[in-house]
Length: 279
Image (cartoon, rainbow, N blue to C red; front, side, top):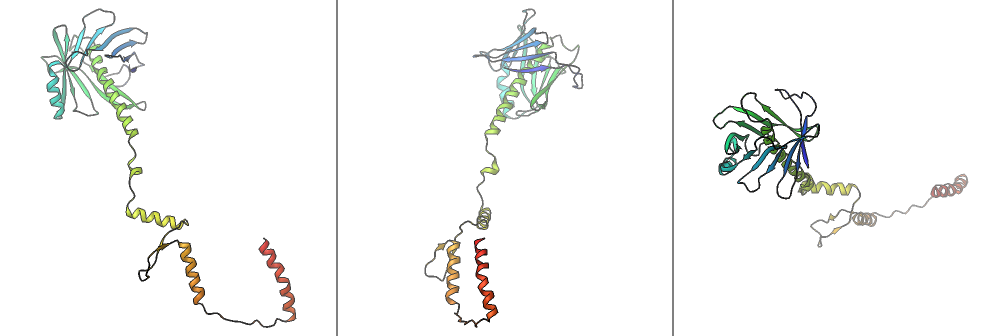
């Protein structure tokens, strides 16, 4: 499964020490389960889906069975949540936090739909001042991980600290899952510059490069000829050389009789030419 580690931090978000625990996500055939385990290996609280509830709904409780259980549910906000998200409102989703039959807190997702700066605030049902909040701080923590910052304000609520942590973890896992899907889609998409069809100018340039490398390039005969055709460049060069040979006047030159000394030197020349030809 997936996991998020819990690191203590100050009000400015600077770490105060090593990790104190980890939240594991275990996938199941019907619903997923999230468990927090401290550094001693003790499991302290668990979060699980409620698949039959309207909208998103999760149950949060301690692992030792002590204390009340809490329900983090979208419930009657489901219709308005979809409308707000459709119109791109800043506060997109609202959730109720129940302790038994008592609504003890409201959680609101802010930041707009599709925004990478995801945030959640927690407040009492009859109060506008949040008692806790969390937001996506970094998308490249240690290279490619998401980093979330959870802020709790003391003496503003009697809810246990694992309630806002659990709700933040649920959003963190969903955001990380979508991030993995987006990365996989980008890897599958072809690169645009490799798929572009060459334009007319680039085609002429490519044809010129091919001719420079000695490829066979067609030469079009003038329009005055009765028959227009395209012949290879080598054939055209041979035809031009043949025409020049036919039109060139033949000149007959009779060599003068060489002196005796020059005749002796000429007798040696064939040996030199033969050596050069052999080499």
